[in-house]
Length: 88
Image 1 (spheres, helix red, strand yellow):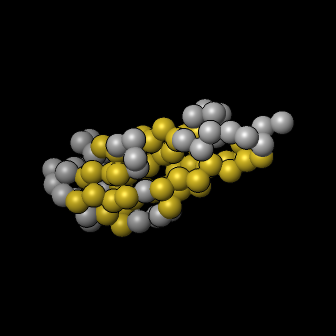
Image 2 (image 1 turned 180 degrees about the vertical axis):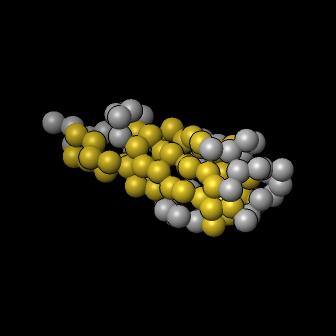
Image 3 (image 1 turned 30 degrees about the vertical axis):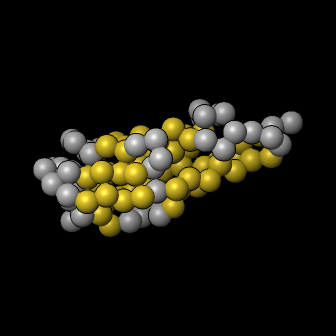
């Protein structure tokens, strides 16, 4: 049996600077054989993006004070991990 128990993101609560990037990593936890890949997304921002490798880009013109980075398991879309990025 394959069971995904959760997704852990690192770093969990970084402080970011507008005009810079932040690298995230994700670990998919579970039992059995399963893909370790995740789909990255970012919420709460106006212009910030995250690529398929977990590299968050925060433009200098980002107006949000914080962002939520999410990594979702490709095997079980109900399992994800989040990190809150406080912007300076």
